Length: 281
Image 1: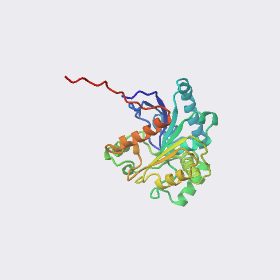
Image 2: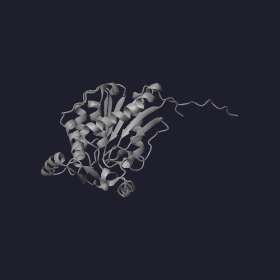
Image 3: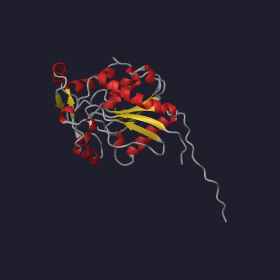
Image 4: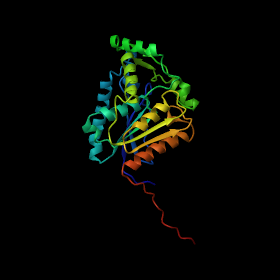
């Protein structure tokens, strides 16, 4: 049995991945807070609202707002807070680490990015002319919706997980021109060092080498340029995009990797309760 104080993890999900399940880890006592961003999951009430994330400024302001709303409670309980993001959410967390309000950032203990979207995998990248046309169109029709479907088979090595995602009506694969361009730009700004993370907090980046949605190589190269003193890059050989949903014991391995890293930086010592020796008769 472990005796620990709680740790708060605020999670930001990826493109067309809604928030549906809690991620609380009872062994480590990590409390996970997640929310559906604008245009995704249960924030969508009508089809016309699908993908209406707004520009990057709105996305980052929303992140600041949700973090700020939780920090007061966390501070009163002396609870360390970590930010975690997956895919599109991973890039958003890294962007926020560079551009978020300094008074809020100062209260964050560390950042976790799972399969962050810095660039798409080469097999998933749009043709150059299509990307250029999309940027031009976004300036004229920013709210115009466009379906950009992910290939379910590349999300995870567990076919049941892929099928469940494909059948989920909340996974609508719909973005707006403004939102899709913003998503690409947030990753590109990090990948090309136009936005540089200078926060001296702790960073953990995890990526599967078999990911065919976002680029494993881009994550690894970006990590190499990251100036933070306390940083860790974890490669998962052959794993796909949703590390947290990979089959069998793999998802447990991933959960333990992340929780263990958080615990080590929460200044909380794991202690194992020892049983008193039993007399033998």
